[in-house]
Image (cartoon, helix red, strand yellow):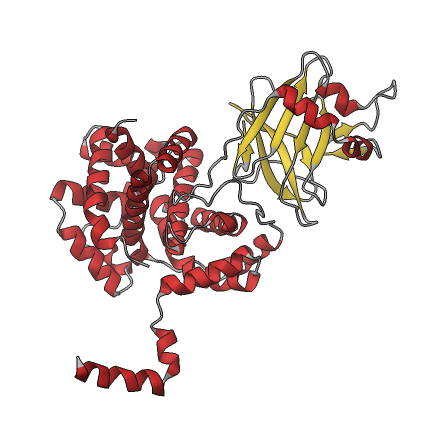
Length: 247
Length: 205
């Protein structure tokens, strides 16, 4: 990467205008080169110093609103490979690509999830989650093991979510590990984001171990960006930003 | 030196609270942040009180709209709470982290909510008239003076771009359009200006 490109990315970082791809590019460069990391830190500190004196108190009511919001917001408990760079942008981690075979293998070694998924019938976000297929087979495994199954790994402020889709099954499965455990009043919600906006796929909540495995029917993600947000329990009509993970 | 010590040492001993009062804000923020990282919501409330002004101010300069600025300010603090474990005091001060996050979120909101053209028009309509500068809202402080002094030392072409970006809250596309400059030139001037300011301002709390 040229020094001109580094300078351009640092300028955009200070301006808060990095795209996701540019952010990853800069973070990677900064991880490899301490000089770049130091230059980035110094530029961000200078930009912040210019802005700091122009403080303006927000309305007093905002304080209670913020404190109420964090009361239902789980903190990330696990640092996935190092503290955040000073970009103000939590990095996406390095697990953007997942071997599908590895995902299948990992899934097979989690029989507890299969049992848990087969316990009950739920309606989440308007999408029926079936406990078993008509033939008694596990509906989640049916998607994962389908010959046409494809997998996408979502990255962003939270990592560890993969989505497996099978057109022949007409369903997708959300799998997650190491997710923040949410308060009772909160849930994750999966969206299909296209040119016309976001359509809810449904909501999901990790268990006490931060693990989730959930099937959603009647959702075709082909041609859409997948996004996950945190929403109040029961889900929302439209996504509450930020998008925590996407692919 | 002896006279100075004679003045200050008794003061510290006689008024132990005085030392706390002049403690580095950076130290205090880091201490609060460490408690926030441990899930201490009382520490978060204290940190909110410390940073709400700079976060809201940063957001509002970009968005202009007060109601939208409140929403984004809340998003910033929720993100700060959620991602507290990622904060590294070796890389940045807490306020730098928060301001950088605030700026990024405000820019993201602009991108989502309106076209650049709409924003420029609204910005022009709401911008204070000439002579009624944003200096009126500046908190009188040593840091404000330090920033102003450092800015005057920049070449005009860099100072103007830096002020438009970080005081007026303009995007580099806005600046390029208003000054009729190529985008790359604006980014280059921002980078050069920040590089020159870095040594003077980088140690701010």
